[in-house]
Image (cartoon, rainbow over all chains, first blue to last red; front, side, top):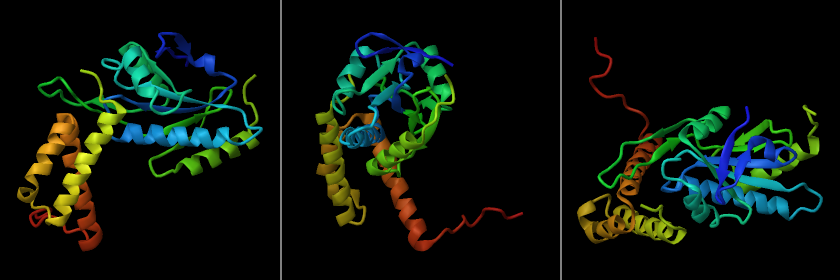
Length: 165
Length: 79
């Protein structure tokens, strides 16, 4: 399915906008205590490793929030700039975000709010690789290093054959 | 309430690590680390303090399993 979300500059982005591009995608939220910054840091390092290799197509780093209630465009903008200059953050309505997550079987569940209204969102922790036809090709868990991710992406790029026109 | 910035995250993690290192030095006797506990609580959102407390408990439990093995509770499974 196609999703329709907003990036940190308030621009509409559909999944089809990313056709023709390799994408490394992570779902998380800006109020995340440690896992999301660590995974985004790792994702960004993997992208930088790939950027250093001549002749490889560019990889689009992408962050989609699982906490649309708090993560509006401004919050995403403040968050993504700490990781990679090309990291795109996407948000939208609760329904749109839920639909985007469902496409990747992402589990997300907001915990109870404390007296400040703060809460954490329990969620699947994976970095997804999407190929230029928009299809899911691979995923990387917490134990995969930046170098392992870059190596895997490179291998996929070398063996890639388009399935769709 | 804005999410913590990168600087605030690092300050929180640093305070947490100092507190945990103190606990490590004192065999988890939290009464020996009260100052660092307060520093940790002041530098981290309350939700994160809870999250990291649970993380610490989990890491201790995991270490226990790895060193002592698994012992099911005494009263489990008795018919």
